[in-house]
Length: 331
Ligand code: NAD
Ligand code: DAU
Image (cartoon, rainbow, N blue to C red; front, side, top):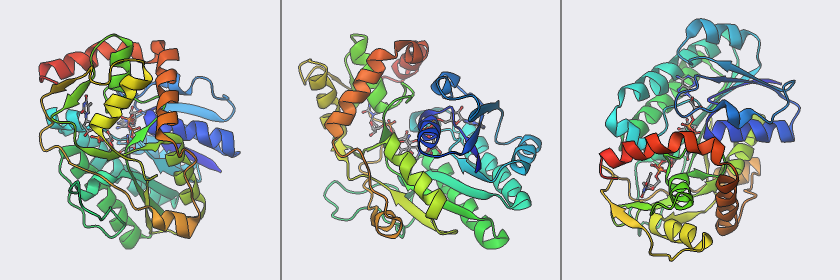
């Protein structure tokens, strides 16, 4: 299969490209604008005869038309992905997440190309800490932030293009990913690289918010499974039963780094901060037989800390600007 991976130089997209190269014979064209979040170095060690990088915007209809003509399927990861940025400047989120997705869908319709849309559990809003329920495919949409509302909008566009125009698409909504190649703006890499630089980790508010962690390689295997055997028109939730409070995660990073577990600071909370996400991935497991491979968060986190320790040249160019952005808002 000839695959286009939009956003393939970002965190989860690059993990997916590594996964596809290791587990299939597919040819991959990465389409990525290389925004501040994209990094060509994340694809450096991959075989040139399998993976090609095209630097471009998913909103460029002529470029998309040309690429879609020559491929069998697209896996759409490209997005503005960070909630804190969406609170500071929402506009790029509308342009890429909504208009960009619309541009891809129109081309998918013209070329009848298989489309997989990668989305987030944040479209469902948040849960109470003691809510026994988790998100399922039938949970109503209720996004909180500019980021999650644009992702919800993009999901709804995909659903409409399936029903109105017969686009051969599937959708997945995944929980929080961790692993290599994640930008230092995000929670886990920010705290790991803070520790590596001798800076105290920063916890928003009381740190009681819960995220449902999954290793990026498990997200990749799930997307590849859906691309292969998912039913057109269906939505699949992806999660690995990894609920943890932010405070627990910071304390574990400190412990694994050989530091006192209280050596962190509480900082200004995020506006509209979602309390808890939790995924019920029964449909994906029972209907498509998918299972996560990373079952031990402590082990996966230790390996991730080791990856950042060994790859300082990959992350350090972005660290100072990222910390300056946070410092300006008391975070
Ligand atoms: P990221 O910010 O690390 O990567 C996004 C990539 O998209 C970057 O390489 C960037 O250069 C590229 N991009 C941005 N705008 C573009 C445009 N207009 N045209 C072409 N390329 C563009 O994001 P991520 O964390 O890897 O997330 C990838 C996808 O997965 C997003 O759709 C996100 O909503 C979804 N998702 C993320 C998580 C998570 O935990 N990070 C969880 C569930 C779903
Ligand atoms: O749930 C899936 C989503 O997970 C994806 O759709 C998003 O693209 C991805 O960024 C992520 O969103 P979050 O907002 O949950 O991730 P983030 O890494 O920004 O923050 C995780 C939690 O940690 C959140 O409760 C806020 C908190 N946090 C974050 C930072 C950067 C802190 O306490 N301190 C920090 O320094």
